[in-house]
Image (cartoon, rainbow, N blue to C red; front, side, top):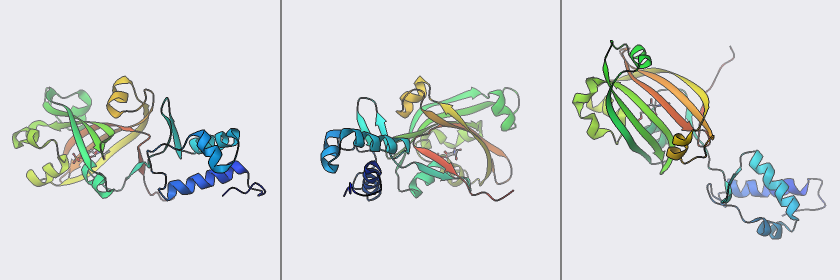
Length: 241
Ligand code: 16G
């Protein structure tokens, strides 16, 4: 409990107590914290001290304020280690989450120039363009637009699109996925992304462009994704150059 004689400032002691509650999941991710009045009673301190403690925890990313709704425990971000080519489905399963897709559109289109270039396609090549929202435990993580050469259309991809694309490619088409190259950039959500990802307009996004190759070196997908920055992070181990 709070020791007012201690040399540790009272607001820091409150922060430590709250951090412990978050760590022990006494206060679970996504739930609201008690009202200011309750916190004042709980710690026998003034509103000013409670506010100072809460502000620090918001600044450090433990808590998040949602306008008109209150202050919430920040959800832990999902982390993707950039070590190997993984599918969204297997990444979520490995983290104990239930993956889900919402199909926004599936179209045959003439390949945009960048896709033609990256997938080594000829002029006027038609491709499959699949737009999906990728969810984990019903929470939208990313909007993913995948461009695939049309050879895949003959293999009932349309019927399988609600499950894993990588499983379909490896299991149904007997192809082996190899390596990938990708870029990650910062972005902000426009109206459409905000609506689809359930985040505020101007919230941070991680924008990824990726080309994935089969084990034999043929490029087989070009993917553009927008991940909700507040829910996702990428990590990698690096060595001294
Ligand atoms: C991941 C990949 C994406 C791939 C998808 C397949 C990244 C940044 N993106 O989201 O390129 O198309 O997984 O997922 O790694 P699926 O097999 O679950 O459909």
